[in-house]
Length: 219
Image (cartoon, rainbow, N blue to C red; front, side, top):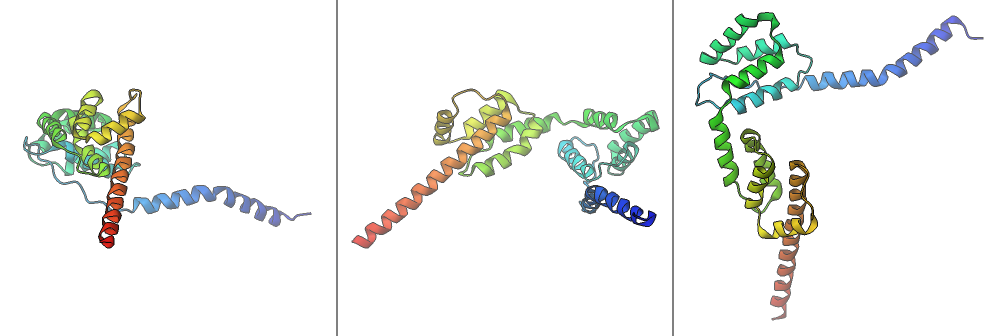
């Protein structure tokens, strides 16, 4: 018959095993939370300053610290603001104080400083962006201005289609006979077809080089 001490030891081991996954997860999170990322730069609220890009850096930074409470987030953002933007922040604070929430604050600052000109410029940049032989490079460059231009649906697809070479469009239409349900499916299909077109082009170039070399050796 087991003694009380032995029973306690067995129970203790069982608890330790049960808690191991949670402990490992916590240790992993502690390690991740120690990652260092440079603070976003200052924002002064001037029309010449790009708010959208700055705000994206702010939200990316806060993603590293998901347990930060609303008041801390709002106060921290205030330390990044200068000039008219700081005046706006202080007015927001005096109006709402501890009743403000992060959802309300972030919506308010986006509404105050959203830059319509920035969206227009992003639309222009999307139209000027061209496929240069690498679908991966094109779609990577495409992502940033797309966020600012808020391009979706037919507007987005038209810009991509106009930038693509005929070989890529022909292969995509041959493989995807039905319309795409959403933009994500459209971009994924364009990416996959682009990789195949580039692979086919590389194989042809390699074949032609081999043939050219063989012909030179024969002479």
